[in-house]
Length: 290
Length: 344
Image 1: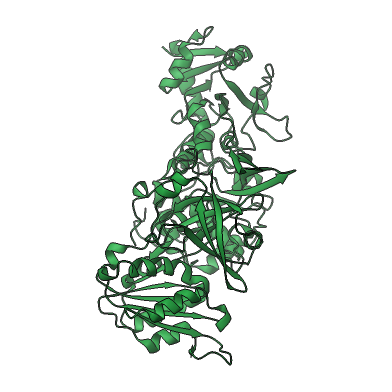
Image 2: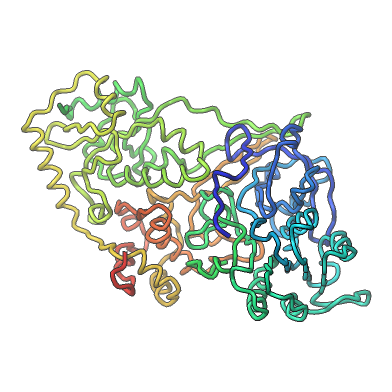
């Protein structure tokens, strides 16, 4: 996607300082899998809660005070603004601290940062969502956005997978989309269990079998890097051009605004110029360190 | 008409400026040469000073800086930004290479989202340059768009003309400061000729040269040449000193510290030379040393020119002087294969 004009992005600075966080309160915690939790939260400042705007695909920096800050995408849809959501897998120091918090706990929040999924470009197209594990988090923001504006888009296909049935995130979404006649969803796991009735197989393979048409379509892919790398060639085989494939990237970030240096891929800062990119852009990056 | 100041009157001059500014001057009090608060009398740096080890960026992007404090009370978390430091800094003796580095840093901190901590200090500051008379063997400023007496990025430039410094008034800020400073002498035609001679002499003393023509395109072409980067990185020990003490490096880390319920979020210098810099819980895009060395070289000579049309190196030579294993950026740049004809 084109690097959207940063000056046009919504900005909500606390005390006029881009590095100061707003205070948000955790309202609900959903145990998605043994290692992944979704946090529903709202701004403590009621006026800000009313005014806050973001777009699907954008992320924020979340603080656990005393431990630090980390970036997570906003996983809820801007079409459902009564609260915000993000999901975090317990993998490091910050996410471990996060998983120890309960409802009512306060977090710091800076954002929204980054670019977003290009809704104008997606309008009228067939959409193919390809997700793996917690990679569904940024996609579900867009999927609900699309469902809430269903007449603006054409066919919607979702291919989602996880390692095992208990690793499937957002199962309440998967069920809702399964019931939704306007959405076609395939769920798969790498390894099934006795109770599993769905597909077994890696996401790229299941995508190849589902074989969505590339005509007037855009694929939106997010998951572990290994899944993304194997999904692009499958899409190319299905006739998708690099410009028809979108993804959202993850890097270590500290500032979130293109200053602290570490999230660059060549001359691109994932935090400032991304995180949403087309495969056409990624292909032409100076570095393959994505 | 330009002014001049006698070398023995420098203490008096700094005292005058101290009334209005927090005057910083070269000092070795901390154990390494750095810009430090002037003690009100010592001007011995005029004899020993070639350049500071710690670059003057430290006065604007300190090695460690509190961003805000936080504490929890019955109402929840309270965020308290640091009190704005009302003091205006005057850096006395900044070298032209380092002044150019400040202009290069401004581009990043002004870009897209403005950095309030850096810019607050930077906008209020006055830079008084001191032309070099004795450049180091490792200096190559004349190849990097500046020179030992280049006044471009300072407010005032002082040129050594024997027992006086010739004062070049560069910016409106500099002119205003001189207009308000009493006790300066008028420079004569002869002084001006002396200054010109000093400029030329200093320029010719910079013996190390670096040809950067075509470097951006040639680096791009060599980007995936793993063998080349392995060779370039072979002796690097990833100590990070060439980045931490580089006047144009600005990477930082952000962390929290909690002492008895009182928290501080601070930022501190960080380096792309460290493998933890990019490490995520599940993977690390720059785990291998050659990738990190490539990042350092390419950020300066390729990515920064792509973003801002300027090489983020001013030829100050610190990374050459301070490297514990004699890694030499000029040798690296010269060894980049010239793969692109007519490259820029």
